[in-house]
Image (spheres, helix red, strand yellow):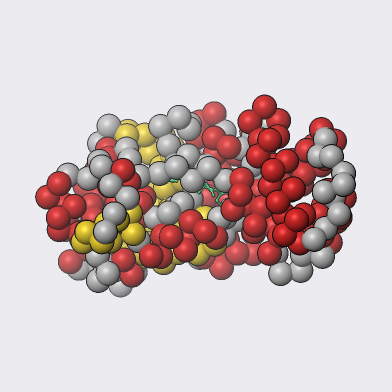
Length: 276
Ligand SMILES: C[S@@+](CC[C@H](N)C(=O)[O-])C[C@H]1O[C@@H](n2cnc3c(N)ncnc32)[C@H](O)[C@@H]1O
């Protein structure tokens, strides 16, 4: 690449990413990563420097391939099964019962994991619901997982996990729901179809509308990468996506009351939940 990647290039690309995704890139953490990424991408595409790359990203990326590549490179996808189990308890043993009582009997209960990353969160819900939520015997439960990163969604669909990823699941449940496959653990082929995974940017209003309305939204450890304005926008998106009396659950470092005041805050099974 003839042109050096400099601070002004970094600012331009950060501004673009922020506008499209709400993700804030900080130069202390992301400068080197982006520098290496742009260099590699220019080599791969045979482009002569940042200006050409940035032009392509903004104006010649009609199918969104460059945007998707960039997203896949910058997102932080850390997750594991049974992370924050008290929230899964609240889901299986309280929230589903309450919504079962409120909803008409032929309606499915719909749960969204936004973001799902590689699938551990929505599959943990499936295990917990099958093990503990009686309503699964009489009512359809639909679970949808979305993430902006297409590589994690592909991994989620395959449902093959490392030992580290499943370390927090009680051993009896590992034996019941996983099959050892070399160094990996394959989540039950019969059950993995219970989650519908899609690549969706939470700021893409058209794609969000297509997902329909939900009873419960888990949104753990995504808002932490956004600034206040983007958090507020996403909180209001969740509000619109929820059916009446539906719930949002956030990660342990995220508090809805600091973002918007439209939700009622409740404590259920030792966990904070936000009700429409
Ligand atoms: C740390 S993971 C959280 C996974 C899981 N919810 C958990 O708490 O274990 C954060 C995920 O947010 C996704 N993400 C970031 N910005 C997003 C956006 N604008 N729309 C959808 N997903 C996004 C990233 O791709 C990443 O996989």
